[in-house]
Image (cartoon, rainbow, N blue to C red; front, side, top):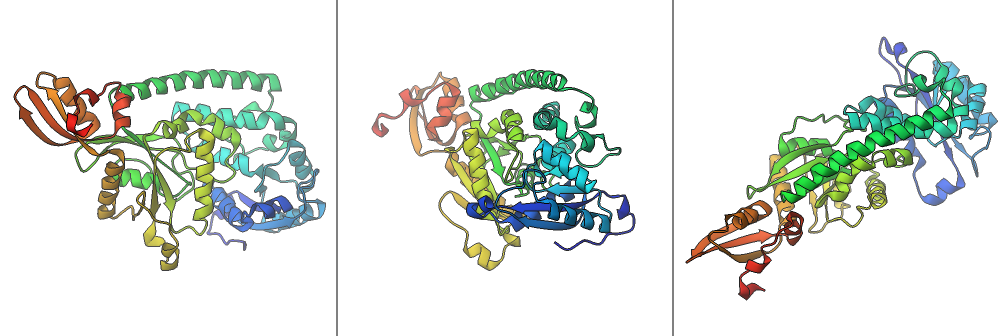
Length: 431
């Protein structure tokens, strides 16, 4: 990566050198280290850091003392001094001892990929739940590294790595941090219980939920805006939105469902972060349908899709019914579009094309609603008729003496969630 030039006043912006270690294990995994570095640069930009250059080191295994080796460490220091950088950001996770040793050699603030992501989340969390989750993840990350981050966290001034609990926890001991972690978990359990209560109420009401999932910056928030006219932030940055947002979405039949935007995934997503955000990500686990949004223009889309599938599997949502939504096709080359896989559960869209959004609504409805069936309901059972309208699409109505005859497109799973059933009233000829 070539050093970037800056406008007047850029000297006030924190500058950083990016560092990556390519080991034999990384080579065997098939991962693309250069793409990972590009992603790290995008993360740094999201955190408000100017990247002045990058260095890659090849070793069989990480150096236990300095991670990249003493010679490469000196090279990092020279590059940082040449361009006035104050920070070195590593693409891999470092131990506390490695951070301490690198600080002594480089005289720079040392940040690894996990800490950078946590820092971004700390700046983006707005709700009480989000703030609690980020602090829990930060403290869980900090606790085993407390001895190694002393000098790093004691540096004066702001910048990445100092948001959230960082400096305020500097003089505390491990017992204080453990106590705080216990308290955060207690508060999050209360929030989770409240969220679970709302979820159960939605189920009893027969509400159908669809969750947008996908790699960060795939366009999930933009799709939520275009489909529901939601007033949510849609920005061309990683993790532009953090807290989940739910809005009502009206399908072509007039039936309303709940569409929820979830936090974006990323490769090497910190385990502590996944654990802390499990309550939020359970929106995907509990959803009736997942919209897996993919940036069709990304050269790494296959790898990104795999990352999303791995995280969903970890959350217990791996077997959920899903619709693969290839977004940003207007930014994709003809060659890239020809490589996209297809199928009945796949659609290609431009988020800002109303016709594409209408096609997406129709496909969502087709996947959520099952085959058409006929039900004969006693005319005085208005509650059952209301249930049919709420959980399905009523395509025709008729009367037969003391009976109300309804033709309904209905997904049996939706009926089960409501705790009630129309099955005893299905027209006998269709059983």
